[in-house]
Image (tube, rainbow over all chains, first blue to last red; front, side, top):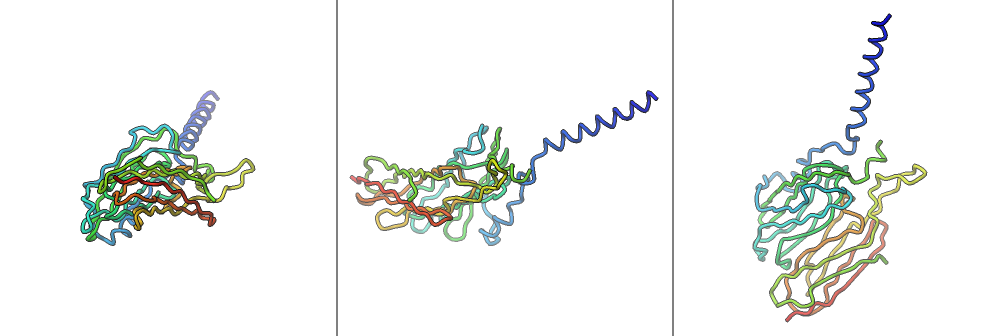
Length: 155
Length: 106
């Protein structure tokens, strides 16, 4: 009979481990989404260059509800050559497009600071739309120790 | 009328870029939270904001639920002449807000 108990114990441990693993998994809203279709919609198929976008984000953000970020795009901001728009995407947020900013030659500098919500550790992507259908893209990785509270509704 | 704050430098030289800082008071509800009774709290966000200075729209933004509560934005504009820097915004329930600051161009 001792063998039977052993099996039960084993099954129990396996079950407990599976439950613990399940609880640790991120909820549905926090799965990484493929943002490529969203980028393609903006660029209309033009491949963005992976340069010229500088993103300042803390390497570790203690609170995902308010993460400061600064974006700088290399551009002379003249009438002929300027940044028209800046898009911020967070691929693990339930709605990845955080904000769209429109600039122009009267901006003088393609630089924006803001505070965003991040639903967990992830890669933040910034897309800059320039004149003459040019696009620049830049990634930034950020570790979020306490995610923005948006998981409750989907638990 | 929604509340907000604006900050511009005390004085700027003509032709130089100056920073405009905006803070809007708003809960920016994501729609993913629930209240104490388990009812889901509907989305409630400021979704549009724009800044006019010297006759131009120097900046505008479309915001989503990924912006922090009390959204903060800082951006640049080129100083042309002394005058008003005006920022206006609206939320998804039709409420609007507006703040202005006087810029002194030397």
